[in-house]
Amino acid sequence: MGHLFFGLGGIVIRHLLLTLAILLFVPSQIFWLWQLRKLGRKFFASPSARQRWNRWGLGVYLCLLVLDLLWPKPAHEAAYLTLKAALIEAPFRWWMLSSLLGFALFVPLYLIDLLGRWSVRLYRKLLPPAQIEVARMPSPARRQFIVQTAVAACATPFAACAYGLLVERTDVKTTHRHIFLKRLPKAFDGFRIAQLSDIHIGPFTTAQSVRKYAAMVNQLKPDSVALTGDFVTWEGSPEREVVEALSGLKAPYGIFGSIGNHEIWAGVEDSITRLFAAQGTRILRQENVTLASAGERLNLIGVDYQSRVRFGSHGDGFVSEYLEGVEKLILPDTVNILMSHNPNTFDRAAELGIDLSLAGHTHGGQVTMEYISPDISPARLITAYVRGWFQKGDSQLYVNRGIGTIFSPVRIDCPPEITIYELKRA
Image 1: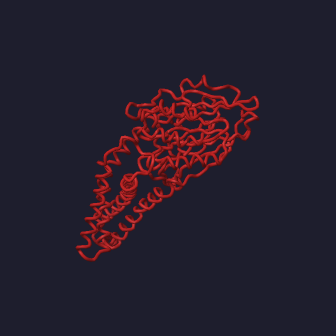
Image 2: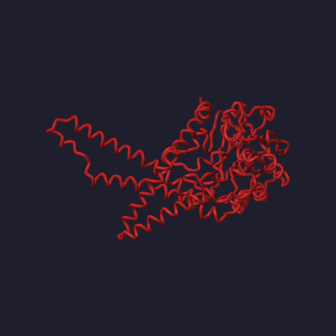
Image 3: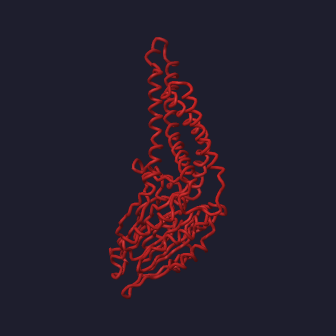
């Protein structure tokens, strides 16, 4: 049933949410522009000042909208912060995300208020004339206060998204995790693996910042490094920059990686594999490699992104069964570690007896409110494994929150993550 929900059910829900977002777009923009107009009426006494406020507000909005949509698309996606990204894309995408979230909060509050007033009207009609005064309608002043309070509360996403854009998006956290494994050879007790995932190099995750994160990984002194995909985003043009930025990673047992969905969608899965190989990083594509120490070994497996839901221009990455053919890569009587970009492969990995899976893909939800409820995360529409550690029998999974962002350069309640695992004998 889980596969069914996150397969067919998940794609239906995603289409419904996309339709809902489109339907909310126009009314949300009208609503917030009207609120800005009301704000001008409150703070400016003269009619001419109000008109200037309205014209400037609408003019800035239309300029950002037109420039964001019509600005010529460069042939090569930049791996540094561009003028367009800083002055147009960042503020406009902040506004779009904030206005949609705020309006989505306002709509149910407004509907509750509307339902309450209709209920009182209906109740008054059913009462005898002598008792009508008992069921009074809320006074206009009280209703206005309630509406203003609701609007103020629904404006909080603007502040939250501003913090997520300017602060949390770059506030990389290091997670230390002990992984206890029954079959771990004695020689690998204390072995340290660092994981980076979902870099999405571009104007908001620049090559300079990726070099900084690589230096942070080196300071953790890992024995090996796992890179679990999505090095680029929609275009493969900055593939050289991301490979070069990660070339400073150092680990005595080697740097290994797997391919994410965005490499496949950008059509660079082969070329980026060659670029990584040229600087000493091995991308494992339906392959395995053994790490040896004192006559004992670990088995590291890597697979390309796999999904049981057709998505992308040609459904690239679609498989009828997860991890098909991986059985021959598994080594008995030792620990098998799988790098798979999509955490949904974990159920099949557990069936195959793979000891540890390392995944990414979800960005941990990117914009979440899991401190309120674990269900408030967009990533739950595609997987039950959004972020952190999971276990099934003797198999374990860790889902890294990733480094970069997509769609909107905002993270809320979900800072970027570098994970360092220390393997321990159970």
